[in-house]
Amino acid sequence: MQQHGRFITLEGGEGAGKSTQAQRLAAHLAQRGLPVLLTREPGGAPGAEAMRRLLLGGAGLDPMAEALLVFAARRDHLVSTIRPALAAGMWVICDRFTDSTRAYQGYGQGVPAAAIEALAGIALEGQGPALTLVLDLPVEIGMARARRRGVAADRYERLDAAFHQRIRDGFRAIAAAEPGRCAMVDATPGVEDVAARIAALVDRRLP
Ligand code: Z5A
Image (cartoon, rainbow, N blue to C red; front, top):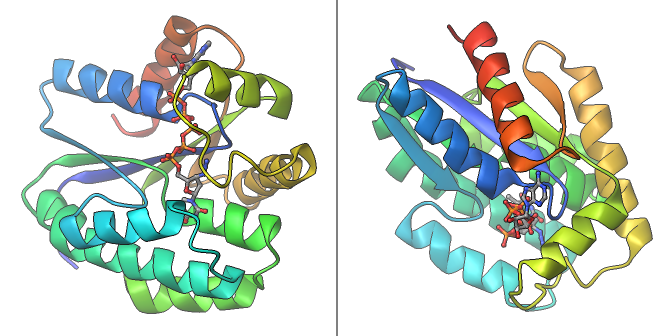
């Protein structure tokens, strides 16, 4: 697969600040004179956005059905948005990607890791991020931040603290298993502080 741009993902639990920091990073890279595409999952392409509505709308899917649907959305996002942007030399910043499936459907809901990796192999054909920033913070702080955001809680946000602790532990395990791709970022400081740390980290890893 020919790829000229760079692919960066942001991951983490509720209220970790992924959307905020994805925008900050996009602005930082633009200041470096780089062409940037900011996107998100589930979604990022018309078909994938339709699947997002199904996923977050509380259709009551079983966890494996949910995993199949997120990978269908991811495949559409990859083919319609991410690949063309990378081929055009853009730096793609994506708010959530496959690690969210590992964390939410795997660690959170018990879908076997082997099934998730098999689906990833089929959907992504070996393509994935060069760098993943895992924003880490205590569950109570993240939930409080998500509540302050003022939008109605989606179905994951309504799940209990034990579920969100499994998600946090899952993201930490993923980052520890792949230190070459993943970098843990302490998300407890203020927005400016976290943004500065991420900018420095990205400049160092992807000069
Ligand atoms: N999901 C899945 O199950 N499987 C998958 O494969 C994928 C996703 C890809 C998507 O929800 C849901 O889909 C998600 C997992 C599931 N579960 N949930 N819920 P979404 O896209 O609607 O939302 P989200 O990704 O969960 O967003 P979030 O976690 O709620 O927020 P965030 O992007 O991490 O944070 P934010 O919006 O940037 O900030 C939240 C608030 O905190 C906001 O008011 C900020 O101003 C404030 N904030 C941000 N940073 C700071 C700092 N540093 N200090 C203080 N306050 C801050």
